[in-house]
Length: 439
Ligand code: SAH
Ligand code: F3S
Image (cartoon, rainbow, N blue to C red; front, side, top):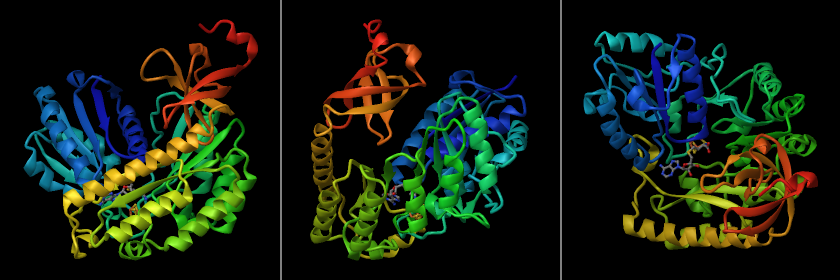
């Protein structure tokens, strides 16, 4: 049986897409391997959001091509594949196929043709494509990511995603619910709904509020998350659905990008600073205790020191639990490349460092305040280092604690005993009887 190896970069949707590709190829008799030296087909599922992500893939391709034996196939898929198309075939001679996010159904055929010596790029958008009939081949887990919307119709001037993932389309609510029912029947208790602007979800009859309520009612589901929402798509209906659906977790990732209304306008974000803060307040009213995280870009063209300070002050005003911070990366063909006022790399780098220091300080203060509090965690597995277990709260805080491997996949109560600033150490609280065997 042919063996398939997929290496995944970038966002959760890419992780979900790799599961889809395992599904497509599984139907053709392929088996999965985690060892690239043993694979007959090697795929790299890529990200194009920042140049750095693409450079990493190019250097990784230089390594992977060494594992290619005669007859093996090396493919690049995902957003970088979509962006570069045939150019990638010219650039890396060992690459046999290049497939964009709407072309995964064609994998078996393109692989067969590559075996026959044909090199090809498949990068057409298919606005009907939801891979509805392809069951994703997931690792059996208590957690699952479910794509509910593909593509993006927004036009943030810095962003390549509309060009790599095509127009926005939403799956039918009934199809999503059936998938979550199947997952829950198989033991999955936490689901994260995925979309580029997930709360703008709309099938012909239903909005995101309906989707949250319908998925939230699936028996066996204990936690429901979604990522990433767009700030101004939190309608009153969505906020009410979040408040009234008990499984919806108290955490929202709410990308802000900048705290300066002037910069937000140039980014073509559909809110200014005041409107964003209104959304934050509305979320906090609807879901008391909600944790908020965000994405921020520094060094966008024309960003002044005063603009940057507004970003810092917004971060402090909101009091995020955490933030992903990025230096602006110019993406070929995006409108921002035509905005004058490029920020020198050293200035952007220095702003990034200052922002990271503010974010870390804020997260630390917040987390130190939580030491001593008790939380329910889903035990996700072993911690990366040591022999501790790792669990996650509904508010998306990670805690490490001692316990038995049998706890993996179950819910436990723990008390936070300390924090590194970002993650917590914790002590399991119950069931008390089991504590005796921990050691
Ligand atoms: N709507 C999507 C955004 C995908 S890109 C989502 O949140 O799911 C993820 C993040 O990368 C963005 O929120 C933005 O902060 C950052 N990003 C996107 N394009 C960028 C660029 N050209 N340079 C730097 N960061 C960028
Ligand atoms: Fe990109 Fe903006 Fe869409 S960040 S994915 S264009 S909402």
